[in-house]
Amino acid sequence: MYAVEEDGGGKLLARLVPVRLGLTTTDRVEVREGLSPGARVVLFGQGKLRDGMPVKVIEAEEGA
Image (cartoon, rainbow, N blue to C red; front, side, top):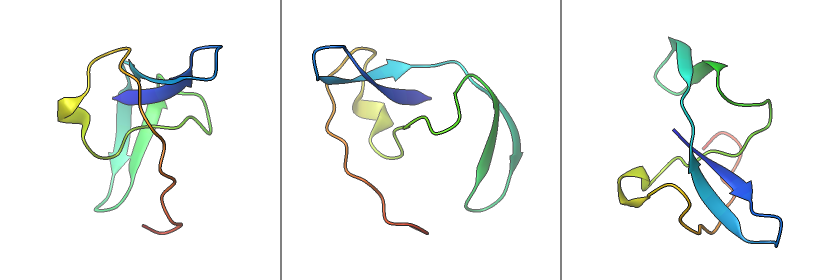
């Protein structure tokens, strides 16, 4: 899974993070290990990313 992290200079980067998943439903996935609460993750376009690539955050609408 890719998380979005700030590099300290204001740039946002994709970071490949190993996670352990738990329960899943059609629209939700439980992350049991690997991410902190509130972490931003990449939902779309993961196949085009590499660890450390710059990203632009587009906030999802609630319920999207």
